[in-house]
Length: 120
Ligand code: SF4
Image (spheres, helix red, strand yellow):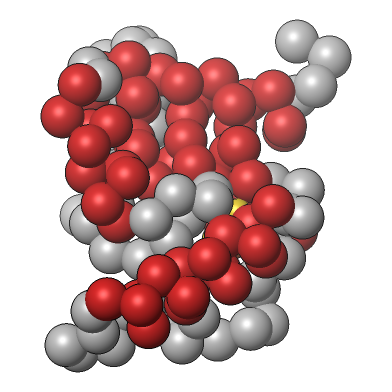
């Protein structure tokens, strides 16, 4: 489905309309060339093994220059899997239960705009 640019209604686009803009920040991701193994739980992973993997992923996130934007993205999209922005799946699940979905989307859009247009 084409992105809603708002052009037909004159309304403000509901989301970054350009996929490049949408993912622009990922070019600076500390995990960009690391593969998914550290950030996503393999089938059946539990207990101390899972805790160790998540801590290792969070250590990468701690040094990532786009951590806040990544976390905002994952909350806005309600990303159910993986470590994003230094937050595990369960930590995000707890947050998503108490934050307003519209506010999460607005927070991501504001963070994205601040990165793309820092002078605004
Ligand atoms: S915060 Fe973590 S998951 Fe997000 S881009 Fe950076 S390293 Fe990757």
